[in-house]
Image 1 (cartoon, rainbow, N blue to C red):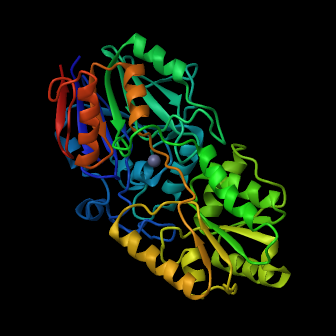
Image 2 (tube, protein in one colour):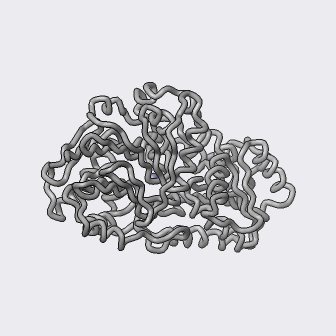
Length: 447
Ligand SMILES: [Zn+2]
């Protein structure tokens, strides 16, 4: 059986991930993502009306026209977690393939929301839930089956995908970190990774975002300490305390809400995406929030909550809000420019439990936001955050657990995939022999 890896998107950049694996005449697609910085993809962005070809032209989604030249039938579309750079192009591309979409339960719920929000295309692909774990297998065809292995990332229910083929397993490891002490969900299933490695791995396709960072990515527990340290310092103050973070990082949101509860303030989630990600996770019983926590999504209810906070006292609440990237229309941005009923006063605290996703647009917007907040007298706390992407020593560990015949770094620009190559070479792999650097649109036949 011929096995071929087709690098569709995410090999020249961070974002718009898509990889196809052809086994004989059967093809499995992994991820269909949006590139976050090519479009205003933040919570209030409107891509629903755009056409696939325009988005491909903008380099915002993977250029899957290459699939027309690949001989075979797409049997499944597999997504490993619910970030938009992995599922965001499903509403634009999935309908071109007569294949089901398979994902872990929370990811599947987010995919369904994406499809429901689509205005341009009718997407009828069935969406199947496959929980992580050896006992859950999805039979794609007579020759191919799929399994998810639990890992950690900056969103819950993230998994590595293992495609079992007659030639051995193909592991698709985008995105992950190995956090042995997560604040939500189970630790990584290292035992199963080792087992799959022993059974035989033909190829490991792996993210490479943080491979150039030495050591290990700090546990989510560290972010918890960083946030708690600051919050508890101002327990007795009368000033306001806002925390901005990524809406999709449910573990972080939960932890901040618990900290608020501990210091005697009511946590309240504000912002459309903040409400959507958290309420979905809560309805699915994947997370429990402190009692008395409220969520407000649309602008009218958010502003009503702001008026309540003004009336009852700014020291009674901790609003957990969107806008840490300076996105137009997000809560922190509106606060900074004075567009909310809540008015920032001297000494109010703004905590950023998020890093700025590194692109010029975000840097500019976030800078503007901070300057405006400071002008109103706010005190700013930045980088109360840890990454969701594995550092070099976690990559080293995963490489040894799976012990793959071939390794293909993905999800990164050339600095990142090249950084991974260096690591692979130090472990005995050689370029173009059993370690492969692919660029968007390139194909690799695995001998
Ligand atoms: Zn991700």
